[in-house]
View 1 (cartoon, rainbow, N blue to C red):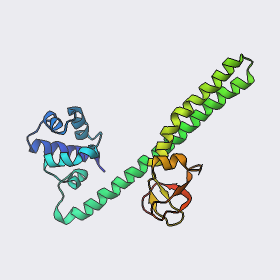
View 2 (view 1 turned 120 degrees about the vertical axis):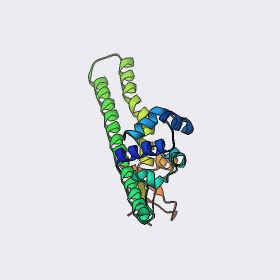
View 3 (view 1 turned 60 degrees about the vertical axis):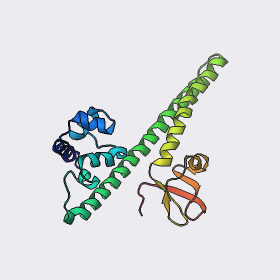
View 4 (view 1 turned 120 degrees about the horizontal axis):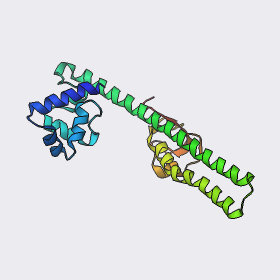
Length: 204
């Protein structure tokens, strides 16, 4: 997806509709800075306001994501290309999130192990020893809900029984037994419990 092309297209459509960046921003209840970022190709409009933006600019979402007005002949092809690109971007974002989760886990466990080792090996008063161990646990306790949220939302879990791929609830992920990124979950499709692997793609 060419963000520069999309940005230029947004600017062109805005001008055709005789709108300033500020006027467009006011219609969408956002800042003109956000509009400027779109038009310079730094970011895409958020999905929550994409339909409203297209309505104001008198274009389709497919036109917006293509960076040009799509003719009837090319519509299906461009729609397919845009959908494929969006799926790829989600997979890449999910992969980055899962890598972030690993980094968070490694940092938290390292802090905990270092402080526990210091508390065990260095001669100190008992209250200080306990304090160090508790301080070592704090980053892990704070990071755990965030890591679980990443586990829940990034990618999908694949049922071993029927092959269905889905996003489980936070509660299901929190309560499930796990080995790494494989969790024992109940499939919403077939209703069976199995050890389900984390996958990035919705399709097989």
